[in-house]
Image 1 (cartoon, rainbow, N blue to C red):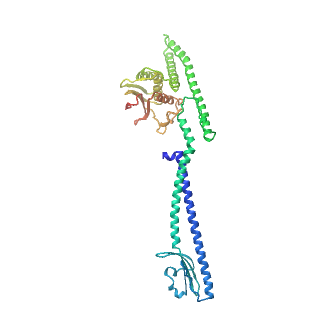
Image 2: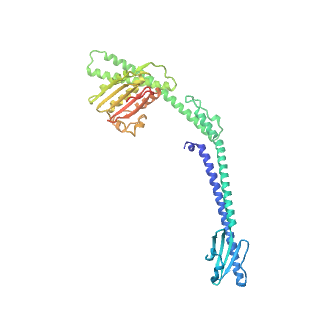
Image 3: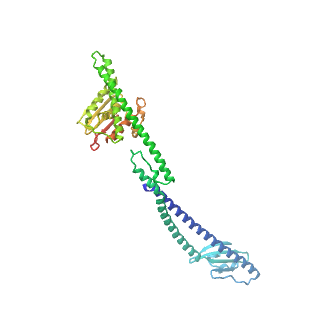
Length: 430
């Protein structure tokens, strides 16, 4: 099927089908015309002979029956028809084709009230020639089909050579190279126009990507200063001994929000750097420590809901990646679990090179599962909650950047399990 979908294959197949169909139609037309002309000529000749013989017979009753090498005639009275061969005797007036044991005949019959006239023509040789003609035409059809196939192969290679060259040059392009100039390699024809359009599209796409990356980098960099100011101010205010419990709780929420925003901007900066091939060198970070901090950040947000947050560390998992990246990925996953679980439990499990988040929420509709990482996608179960639908999209980009693997699974007893494997070669958590 893959071969048939290729443009060159379709072009070759078109030549073959067109050539074969044209040859078959030509052969059928030759056979039809040959049969029609032959039949008309024989019928006309026999009819003229019979009519003329009847006229002559009425003028001279002693006239003998016509007899030629391939034409044979019989004249008899209706009560003495036994002299006529049996295959022709019962034929009514008209033109007939008769097949005997060893021959084919065209027969003209005229049955008058006082006598009957039969004129037969042996067309066995004509039938033999027709069969030979059919065999010859079949050979011609096969020959022209093979010729069409060869012509299709040759012409497709010539016609598609510029397109193939263009495809190879596109495959060899460096996505980070803005100096794309495909048009210079092709003449000013349809392929050259396509190359020029691709050059223009690549230039606009590169400009858009550069602008988007610059915007992300600038925004992330500019946000770091006000976030640092907010963090510093909240730390100073938290150090005051006369704070009320309510004000302290509010300041802690501001500090947590500032920390999450700082982690997000830092992660976006890493994404921008990765697009330029610069991930930098990082030290190993403890996944359990990051997860514990995230859980602590979300505990005050539970409010009056009957929801518990728990964590189990089966063994320590250390990952070489920025702490901010791990915090953004794990924080989004735990945050979604806390946000959509109205009651029950959110259980975080660390071990075997992975982290798993189990919740007792509504889960994800199987039809929506393939779309969870799309930007701004929000499922039916999450329509009543706040959020922009960007969190999992950022998570997926970071996971792909560092070569991790993430999997969503609906739990049989209800809820959702998210497996994040930092080392894909290891088995996932059970």
